[in-house]
Length: 387
Ligand code: TRH
Image (cartoon, rainbow, N blue to C red):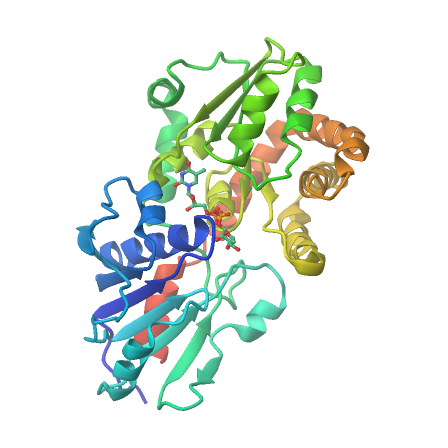
């Protein structure tokens, strides 16, 4: 029995906890819902300065503005945008303002209410995806929507044209040269290994630079502003820097340009959630610096993904990837740096030696993920045809 009409308007709520991912994911979903799913989208954010880092067109001083078909509105207190949309998407359990939730309960028909959860490759996600959660007091039901890597989850954010644009860029030497000139003012030599680095504090960046320096071949490290850039700048100033290693640090790139950096590099070090997914769409070998959680809970999450990602690899390839990720994430552990060196150096050498086959695998992995509908389409189908 299908009672409710398809949704025309979506209100998406995002509160910045820390870092950029919450906004990165929320903006990406909002843009896709407007451009690809034909929804009238309002994106409510409490801190516009963070969105302004990813989208320099955003004016953080303005309360309301439009960008790429999305109305971007600052969450104000008291909250006065009480015209409720057909579907309400809160990201990462950020709770829409109480006034708005009260208006949702008074709306006829009731809006569809979704909580977009964090991405995980763990098996329990399948059992939690799409589960209802009745509001304790109000006549409202919220549904959990889990991104994921398997058919029993909500899938991943992937713009319709993304992979075609990636392939075009990766096949076009002129476009890549123009990109490099635009971000570092020169084009890398053919034999240079190009490595992008986006990490949390504590990643053994210096150790990695040293490994690359000892491996002899020319390596370019590229790091947009952040921990990695600071560590590379510090390392560059030490005596240990070598001519074979070039370090480029730069301001934060607009979100779509960051995609091009991932496409243009040979190996990408990424973190969190959104850059982690973008690295997979880039079809290049990558290492994931996972957001550290209490009691090491992040290790479970990391190995759950590694088990899926390396399942198509042979033992030595899987071992190389797993050792690099282990050394990269262990880097933050107290006093690990010293003990880590051998394993990081060995793991990096193993990965570089297998770069071609790991790149093939990355391309296969991206293609396998892309056989599924993207998350925005899955979500639209869920709210329009299931709820
Ligand atoms: O910034 P993050 O560490 O965010 C994370 C995630 O939100 C994670 O879920 C949460 O648990 C943790 O914070 C607290 O990493 P993430 O998810 O990769 O988001 C970074 C965003 O920044 C992504 O959208 C890509 C974008 N970006 C740019 O636009 N330009 C850049 O130069 C770089 C490096 C990133």
